[in-house]
View (cartoon, rainbow, N blue to C red):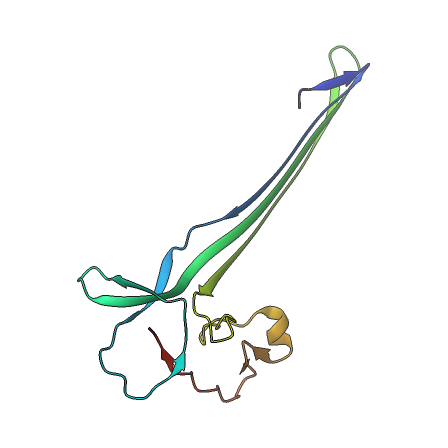
Length: 151
């Protein structure tokens, strides 16, 4: 916004907002195992691919993906006391919030998403002592991880 003026008073205001989601920086994977010791929970959503060594593996989700929100406000105010003297004030506010999270591609038979068993607890769930079905209170025993069957 250009500088605005009304008599001896002048002002300038700038406001901006940015909301962005990054591409995944890492992916959760599991090498394809030709032998299955015990059958697990059948899942869908895994993507078959090959790693750098050419070995087949399942891509089961993202490891790190960020969502950022930035807000910026700047206000400049000025008052001309005399032609040679000016009183001015500058106010600025900048806020940045960023959340990094993992995301599972896996779905159970009812098409419900399966959470990562190692996903860190969210603040709200941790306040109640439960995160993704796991008791996160100090000294609590962790539930055993579920066996999953891909394919």
